Length: 410
Ligand SMILES: *Cc1c(COP(=O)(O)O)cnc(C)c1O
Image (tube, rainbow, N blue to C red; front, side, top):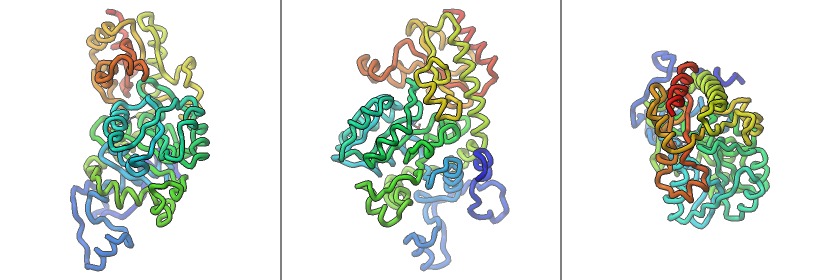
């Protein structure tokens, strides 16, 4: 077993390119031809692996899927068109009308909206628990629970759960534990080692390496017996550990049509090759900026799991290889000050992405969460005085100078 970066670069040798191309080319194509009617029949029947149509599989996408599977330590991986597509496909695979999922109110905004506004009207019950208190999760689970879903570091609350404790509970109830590993990625968080069963990723963020394209991944860690899942039981009997991949590839993913474009898969593979270098740098910059902001007298408070006074420091340290991600938040004394600081910055960009190569700043209450009233905002821990900083890989001194200049005029 090679190390993370070696695996990310070399991937899995699937087939030698006809020209000996060192890099798997972009197969921007839809259909694939066969030598005989029997061959195409065998491909469709799943008896002989072959690409038939790019909504189902594609060589460039497959190369990316195999690389991410390799670095994550998972059993199977499937790439989709975005992080939201990954979450949607997983929930459609595991749950249905008349069942429930247990999750947290501290979720990526669109995920919360997917659950509440899109899936709830289809008959899915959404139950909320406090993921930092495993006993509340245990109490929320019943016979109709089809998944427990949470994020590795919530955004913008920056909470980190104890995943081993949660997995002990979900295992007890035979319910799959699903984790959105976007902001930590398999480089910082090997979800399988903490007993997580299914991992979803928005590869749009860290993995793509500079916000070049949208993408998502679903990884089955191979540690859940799908014969215990009411929805996947038949697939489990037929395909064993490949059940979830089978259900997606031959039914849900195929039918929903949320495939990753080959060109995007190519960009994401390219990003994956340098992921470890960029995350190391981004995490280093984030910790240094958190420490700088913490001692600044215009800053009311700083929130980052990397700071020893964070309530989530120990969980993060133990589970994320001693690094704490590239996102921090800090509070000023008013919304007015937040806007004034943001408007004064010259290098840091006002934008809504996270884990870009560039450092990005955002006022969550007036943007991502602007559709929610104050009562909901306080429930989900979003304050009008809070600024979110997603820290990139620029030179630290330049970032510090930009923020220092902005804070000086408050
Ligand atoms: C961005 C993000 C998503 C959604 O990903 P897209 O690729 O934008 O669809 C989901 N979860 C988390 C934690 C994210 O940061």
